[in-house]
Length: 67
Image (tube, rainbow, N blue to C red; front, side):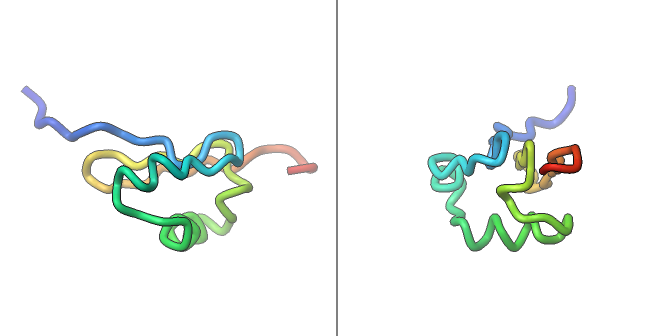
């Protein structure tokens, strides 16, 4: 059996910050911005940012020239 990893949370969906989910994991926008900046983008430039039960961040930047 795989080890239970907890619930993953969406933190950004199509550039929209999910403030309620940030609150649920005890984080704020400053923390989110710092984490997403590691991917060389701002949170508003992401199509999706998630965090899993282990604290691993997944970040996918929006595509296209206009984004």
